[in-house]
Length: 111
Image 1 (cartoon, helix red, strand yellow):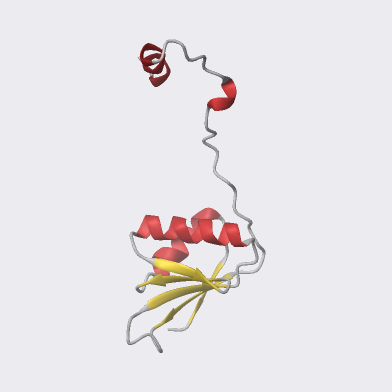
Image 2 (cartoon, one colour):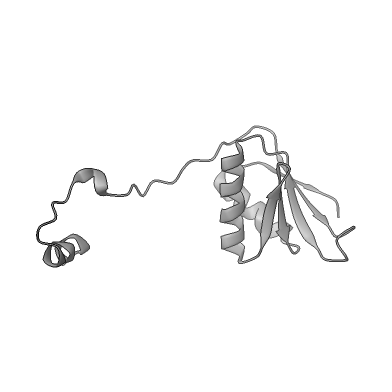
């Protein structure tokens, strides 16, 4: 018994319409030709390490979706400010792998 049958039993008067189903397709991100710059920094942040992603040319919405995806897969905090993604901690290698799986080209800057 699937979810739709269970809902019919709970709500017999409700007529299910095709338009009510949510699409499971993900919004595709803008893939750019230039590499995304991935760098590590702790200067000016009271010694706390952060990973910074710069040089993404897509829309602000795509940038926020990319940041949310990275943060959820790594289980860390972060933010989006001034067209850059700031991830708490030193996760350059893991972030670069995630971005390469998505089809982005990534350039490591510094150490």
